[in-house]
Amino acid sequence: KRHAARHGSDAPDPYATPFYKRVRALVGWCVRRRKTVIVATVGLFVLSVVMFKFVPQQFFPASGRLELMIDLKLAEGASLTNTAEQVKRLEQMLKDHQGIDNYVAYVGTGSPRFYLPLDQQLPAPSFAQFVVLARSIEDREAIRGWLVSSLNEQFPTLRSRVTRLENGPPVGYPVQFRVTGEHIEVVRALARKVQDKVRENPHVANVHLDWEEPSKVVHLNIDQDRARALGVTTADLSAFLRNSLTGSSVSQFRDDDELIDILLRGTRNEREQLGALSSLAIPTQNGTSVALSQVATLDYGFEEGVIWHRNRLPSVTVRADIYGKEQPATLVKQILPTLDSVRAELPDGYLLEVGGTVEDSARGQNSVNAGMPLFIVVVLTLLMIQLRSFSRMLMVFITAPLGLIGVTLFLLIFNQPFGFVAMLGTIALSGMIMRNSVILVDQIEQDITAGLDQWHAIIEATVRRFRPIVLTALAAVLAMIPLSRSLFFGPMAVAIMGGLIVATALTLLFLPALYAAWFRVKRVDE
Image (cartoon, rainbow, N blue to C red; front, side, top):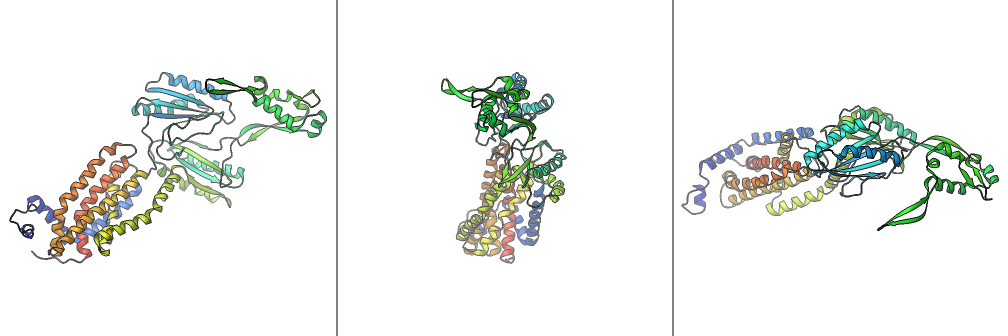
């Protein structure tokens, strides 16, 4: 009746149905017991913050593409011939396996970048990589499980790795710890201690150092006096060994549009038998030749094959894959306390840092956080323009984080990780919540301006805005259902759905109670 009288019409009040009467009674109860509602809502928010630590953390999920990457790493110093032999063995395993559409192998190098976030590998004679294309996602996962078990059994002396393609920036190994310092020996010793600690975790696999093992090397110690007496210079000796062992290009062979170098080098026996090295005939400047053993001695030893530097200091990274369904951030939290003893032993100037997915995730979050101040200023400015009141602007703004209650609840229920994409969805969710709050507060102010007292304006505005607020929220939730099955956008969709459902209920129940408490609205008896 009150609504019909305001419009000067005898038409029946559409908000006098039994359903809206129950909504009106519920809103009135929340306004009357505003303190209880506010305390309960704040309690739920605090609980959601506490429970959020149990939500799995993830940077980006694996790609939904059908390719699998197989990395084979032989011992440091292995030849291309040895690597090619292992590749042929694996090809025989893949040839007739069910579910494989096709595959391609690269020996001595990694695959070219056929996919933007591909983690490309450096060329090395001891490295080979396969790209295996499955027929379906189900086949891909079945092939991956078969390969992981088969490679460990059939290639026990190799370090093998089977991975899906990544989404987001290429990280490589998800779990990484980096040791940086001045002296190579100290850095490697500390990295080995970290490696042992990481291996103790049952959820990691394929733990190794990015420096690999030291390579076998041959040192040539030239007797300069004897070499000069025989007419052999260091430059001549270097050029001869390079041409004999590695080879020098003397011409090129054209195969269609491809040019292939023609190499002049020593025989296979000279190149592959270390015992024959000392008997190589070195040409002299007077036209004769002398054995290498007459001008130099050979020493055998070990050296680092690769030395990585970070900020101009030697840096060793302990890398590991994940065994099972654990997330990188969860594993790093488990491993970090076990590294306290290693951290306590670090000499001055040495660092132990977290790398991998956790580091990249923090870098991505920091880039988003850098724009937060501007985002907040713009939002507050728009709210002030719309509401023309500092107190109302602040009241609407503090409702934005309440979506975290639903985000935490739904991510835990559906066991979805909170990653970079879900974080962006949560930020967008705060805008949806503030939009609904602005709609309701603006309606309350319009009713008060029309002559309705504050108490009834709060209740009646909520009743009248119930349908548009619920329908717009429901439309957004339904639109997220198809996305919820996506590997990439699924966590974002679940976060928005949960946050919007809970936040819509809070807009219709908590916000009227907050408005009444904020402006100290007194109850008006009917």
